[in-house]
Length: 176
Image (cartoon, rainbow, N blue to C red):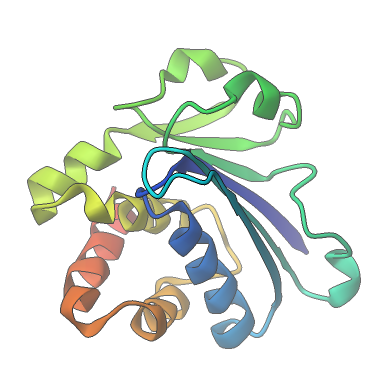
């Protein structure tokens, strides 16, 4: 069993944190192997951010550090969509924040889209947890992780002042 997850967005959207949470949930709490790599532009906010996450049941299934054939791709912002589309397979699930990315660009794929940033703002009072709302939603597609695994990883990685809000965001996304 192997899942390859590609997360693309812009600096400040929590792309890297989303990848770290997935990797920690898989490796520490689901007893799986995980490889997480990050790349980002020099700008603190606004430049392209990318997280590659590979979750596998054995080390042999994850012999590389970059997503090659994504099972799930998350676009939080429309950076280099045409380039990334070239590595998608017919079975790739595409998760989009409709506020920034038009679902019609992915007609040939299974698309899960919503205005996640708007949902976070209206439901939770801030867009800063849109990444965790998305995480809650993709958990239903990742059969190897459950909400408890991810909640524990969030507790490990998120500061106490933001913890309850992030756990609510996870639950909000899971219920979408």
